[in-house]
Length: 217
Image (cartoon, rainbow, N blue to C red):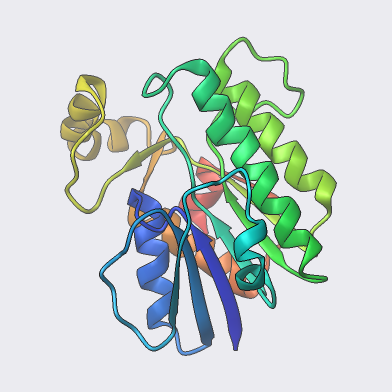
């Protein structure tokens, strides 16, 4: 029986991760760190309302005794200014992961990254560079196990408000066209969430899961 902590549980992927974890018989407790109430009532669920993702000291007790972390906090490129993107992608990840590592000797950390992430941190694209920085932070912290997931386009299996016109267009043409012509360019949110949970629970023989790996898992 595992204790799981989830960040980004109100998002497209994180909400499916939460749903998956709550249904599992081999999960003992699910803790979510969230800015607003989820409205979900479940005997396994511990909901922690927290707004400052640069400082977790006042909720540190909730980060103790966690077997698995599934980290799904993120934002789309262009959705916020560059400085804010870096803060959310890099600084939030560092702040949370450092406190989690400090309070747990053995934790499996599953990180939702993205296709094209650059571990050399030299890319001119802020998304690739900052995701690479976040990945390096986690790898250098040396959790008991670290798994990095790099999906391409994530097709929302649950209807949502798309962030811009490009995403609206891709959503329309992904299943009938793109997924058939370029099968490894994307993955459904349901598949991604399921694979992240399965890998976290049962481990794997690789650290980085590219889009193709996620689809074939």
